[in-house]
Length: 449
Figure 1 (tube, rainbow, N blue to C red):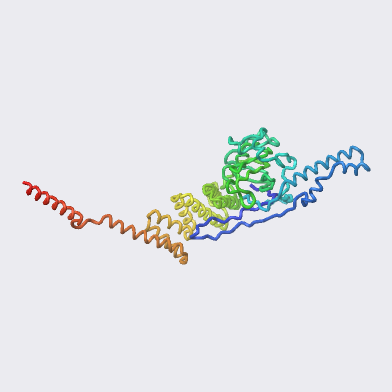
Figure 2: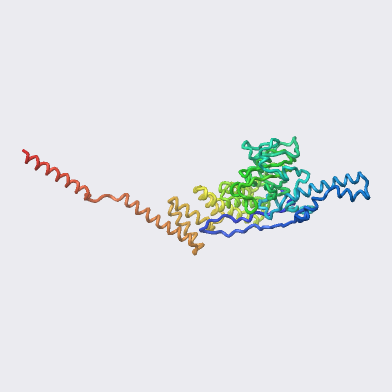
């Protein structure tokens, strides 16, 4: 599972989602901005270098070199000009807001990190990658449709190993990729990105594309915003409804490792990456995707081994328990947003199994029990929460609401079963009216006779 990050990144600075009533202190991943210079230098200098006339270079070389050397030198200059022009087209961005699914490398021969504007596939700097309009590429005949709606397309630049089966749902893959906007601003870049297909680690476009690729294949991937970051975009570098163009190489395909076979340190690392992805979706109000990410994180954050025994040091087990509590609290919040109240109650009780004095879970459990009409248990849970945090206004407010519900329920029940005593005045009045009418009728009949 160890991989080698050789490109810069900035992880999502996201907080664990919390309810406004009872806030939970959580740490925020550190951001690291890397501001690198463009490979061609400042724009003015780069333009001068790229606009040199090859004929001028040959005139200087003819004094000391023969025709063959001049020709080779001219070709070299043309290649340099082309590379420089490509590099100029790729603009840098100061934000890398991807959750990277890999651990820091322990190898000593790590190459120097690439600058943000340097392309990862210099030998495939084709026109489609450098300057073509996306509208043309969506309509191009030599591109392959990955989806029937023609909103996800690819063009193979280099074929892969035909003897290796394609990746499938649930497998783990490693890719090298770089993504740009239509103005060729680099917004995503990774030399070794590891993710599991179908677990929402990356955008749908990358998941769909790798399942159509052979191992070793290099391809261009054009993704409509529907398969990328959609209406919300991704602050601050990807606008709303922005299509993306990727250069992508599938480096490796393997089965997803069983978490119970991994060291606890790796389980914590992977589980936290999944949780961070869930937080990313939660902040975008994509609650179903957030809940799925939290479920996957909980599957990884376990201290059970394959033979059913507890493994790891006491400190590591306690750390796993802490992260499980965070995941469960976040999952319960997402379930509430999805109006899955029974599931949220079950998840909150799972938190209390791990941490009986977790005020956030106590408050949520008491509130859900009160909403269900289980007033006695709700009162006990909320009183326990109040004892732990006697100054929290939200707990006081929920207890007051619960007391009103209890008293209102008893009054209603007594009113419903209360028996009637004596005759109703409406019944007596009606009888008098009928009797008076009969008397008047009798008098009139007697007068006529």
